Length: 578
Image (cartoon, rainbow, N blue to C red; front, top):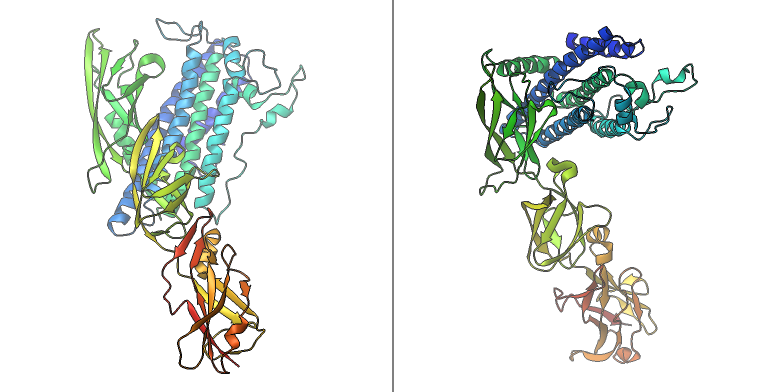
């Protein structure tokens, strides 16, 4: 675990993980309990460096994409939002783990309210109930926080693996992402009880449980790094070159958080400096000096949530901006204050002024016809906003049209337009608020005009064709092939009637009869109708005309729309008598 092609820092982290696991098997002494606290502190420091490193990696890749976009290469543009979403998911996972530690410390009898230290380092019953649940069977997974943690890690790992496998299709896929009970659980203890993953990791003194939580954060960051490396390869970045830039950024951030011995500094460490509209800007707030008393954070810009011990907090600000015309980004400012006790015992008010960028999410629409919608037809389109990820909760409107959300997917919408233009308005409902994202404007066009075809005795009719009494006549309305493939239920046609005319010599045509075909499908096999006997009363070589009255299209709703685009010439087809 500490070998392989790993950095020295990662080898050290892995070794501490092994030491932590080994110590759990020893008889707990005061020295070992103190060692657990030391390991937790070191792992926590490594987690902060890992966070800085992840932000640096993300920034290096996003800068590379910005350079490509400036050069007119936009094939990787959407990756920027994906990197932000991945890091947000990772940050949420880390916050979940930190939250478990905070909840554990809030259990009555665990923490000294004055010193904010663990009352009994060897305490095991309260934290066992916390992680495994009351009355949990020793061999089972329990119903406590450990099970919730395992399920959360499984979901997070599966989500990351799916992204990784899409970006590395030609290499070994990331498999077996689900947590399995450790091999050690196969060996029986003296009482004949097997250990699940939950019990294996969280049975023991409270200081060991807290250290184990810190160790699991390292595993989360390693998973994120694996996906970031896949994206770096896709962008043509060498991992070695990226590490150099990231190390410089990490060192810079570490220098930024240093404080003078006689004072304190309020630090804001944003999860991301660019936030898609509709999501939330989050930043971790710290005071750069470990305080024995809680720090009072305050901000009128958003919601402040204190972290464990009161020395830090998370500021959350909804990124719901109204973008200026023609702009896809806007800047938002925020202010945070913190009241802290200085080394001399006085109260000092610290202030931090920060900024972040709100980026207008891109609307991605996929359909068979991107720029046009067919009038009075069921146009199914897929409307997505990738930057919002799982938070995308669409609300879509359409002008001069009927619009219905699909029952199969929240991203699919059926639009039946009526006018010449259709403006599709896309919004997302987040935290009970509807946030407008943008509009997509479509031209509305009529479906391609079908063709009218008449066959006599199986042959396509023409003016040169000679027909005799008793000939079999068939009328077909043939849809445009591409339109029929795209929207088969909107490519059904009928005709109201066919009138038959005879022309004797040079005289005007005279009606000889006709056939009512209304309500019958003229596509497919077509419609048969007879040639009236009166049409053959003229001498041989006379003309017979078939005149189609109205061509009617029947859409997927059963609504009938008369096609007015046919000329009189197109609706008349002539043959010659024998």
